[in-house]
Length: 463
Image (cartoon, rainbow, N blue to C red; front, side, top):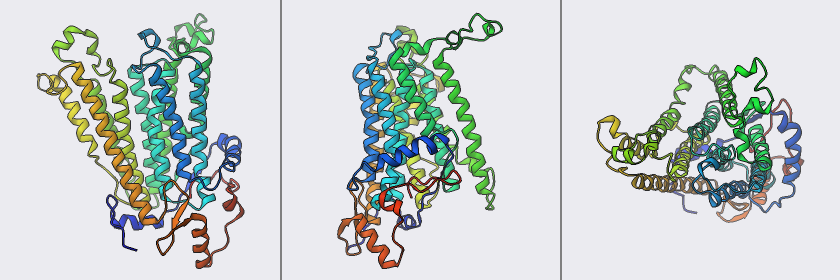
């Protein structure tokens, strides 16, 4: 069989894939005592002919369907007070169901990988890649359910959720294991949003505009009457900010413990966080750019943001999400291949071009060269979305091709390549390799897909 020539991953990095082993810590009580028993049962319903990555992708498709229903009813992403075509309330129940099953599919893909003999680094890459895409989609759906629409709250929500995901990936890169605390986004965060959708299904998005003191019947009760009666949706955002701050300290603490065992500087890992604020800062600078003078004269509202007040707002958020997925995908790839940290991403160059062009009135006092009108601005944003999607699709395709060819595994089928280059059922190839190496037979849970007993708050999702 002819040697495969990699197209994206260097040969020396591919060789490190064989050293890969998954390590995970899950301290969530909800996961251990409620959800994990359900997931252990749920995975047994799937035939072993279904590949784990197929399950992962199916879960992402459920969220994608939720997103398409939102676009079908309100492609402008407007709230009711802004004249938006708000979807019927029953839609939010389907969003709750879709997100719940997305979490379940995401949780059992590792269990299915062990059942089918398909566990490996490709699974972690594919799993985290789908999670990165889901993060932006859910941020948009959640803010829509909260009746925030085109606002800086929605932008802040996306940045906060992406920052949390980046922190988790950064932590895994330095510690070598995925850490989920007592309260984490993939577990409690998702369940909380599921209930948020259910409440919205009963009361509608405008319910979240209600003041938090009004809901508690404290708005006229001293001394609470002196406290700003912020809406429930804003309170939800503040709660998320507190959670993000907690995760920052927790993640840094875990990384600090890891670097103590080496001679590395305790502050150097902090530098690896810089790509995200740089990327987010460029995006915000573009979004907050002033409108040209002639556009401002015709529509004073555009002083806040010309993109935010156009139908291109959702496209802008999606483009940012794809660029983020590309960045963290390269970070995860560096983790599983023990490669260098990706400090720079060429996808930023396009975003910088858009941000600089839109801010030319502030920088040098002249009109933009490309985004001269609202129509051209929208066209440029949609083109940016297209470029971001094309580059991310190229990255995903090349990485999957390199890993599957080097390791001799299929991505969406339960097949492995034997030493002669022929494709067979992955379990048969695995059993033959173990027999040839004189290894013991798999333990019962490895054969049947049952999870090992959880001990010391440690669970293995994908070996």
